[in-house]
Amino acid sequence: MTAFSRLALTDFRNYPAALVEPGTGFVLLSGDNGAGKTNVLEAVSLLTPGRGLRGAALSDMARSDGPGGFGVAATLNPRPFRGGEEPRSGEGAGGSLSPATVPTQSGVGEIYLGTGTLAAAPDRRQVRINGASTSVNALAEWLSVLWLTPAMDRLFTDSAGARRRFLDRLVLALEPGHAHHAARYEAAMRARNKLLAEPDAADPAWLAALEAGMAEHGAVLAEARARTVEALDARFADSPDDGFARASLAIEGGSEGDLARTLRADRGRDAAAGRATHGPHRHDLAVTHRATAQPASRCSTGEQKALLLGIVLGHADLVAEQRGAAPILLLDEVAAHLDPGRRAGLFARLQGRGQVWMTATEPALFEGIASATHYAVAGGQIHPR
Image 1 (cartoon, rainbow, N blue to C red):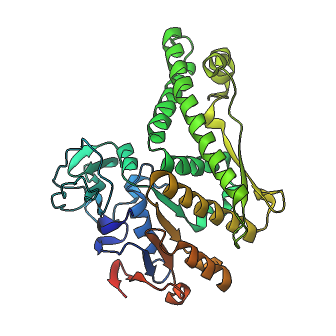
Image 2 (cartoon, rainbow, N blue to C red):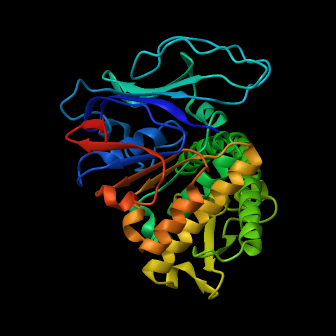
């Protein structure tokens, strides 16, 4: 079971310093609105590739009256041993990290993760694993983190880009290499757009090389997305009704065939548009309520919330099956939007499924959870309840 045994925050959001030492199951955070509960979940989400559950700029994460940088450090324990690793020790971003436990062939070891920024470079994110500096994308090799926040309630009526980012988070939890191909594709596309904006100075050979790179990494992106959507859709088709809406999933948009040839033929149109008009960056995740055959965008608010929750829960089960370890779940104010019966069903479904971090304004919203690590959050401080 993948779980954090320690989470330390330094000058992050409203926390000068905070330490949480949770158990392996439910981690409950209760407190008034604005106390900083979601900030804790955001810190956990930063221990994976991407910009976290808020999608905020790094400079916005540092404490407003702090020195300028911030740090998030965590101990991940246990985890599977992977042959050939050389365990290291040292300091992690955001706090002092003790030496890593040397993994054994029996399959257990501790991993020390750290991320943050320095005051001198507030927009440059640093990542360390067992004290060694590494890339942000390397975090995906060690754990999967999924989240559900109130802002995601409008996912089905939001832009295609928002749904595509949601889909990529699902893919990343199953295929850690997805972040690498997404980054390479985006870099090649940005460089191509820049060249097309200055056609007189554009080198055709360089354009062709960039388009080949987009085609290469774009094909991997598209295939990974298709695998995830197909696996989830098949799972929902075969699963019984259990009080959570079942979705039908498909990918729309993008392009078919030889992408490099399409990009080459579309240079004039793309130059005028200021962007690439074909490719996997145009994908959209189409979601339909399986029971009613209604597009999710036309469903009621309650149905949309149930669909989204059903997708996240089904995907968490899929990750556990395929990666051999349940993902860490971050559920922000989810219990408040469920009736008592569905709330009890949610808690029962999550019991024993790994580490689940949940927030609520009232401790009463967690009634029915038999065993948990419960914290009270107030004024930039976290205390066991």
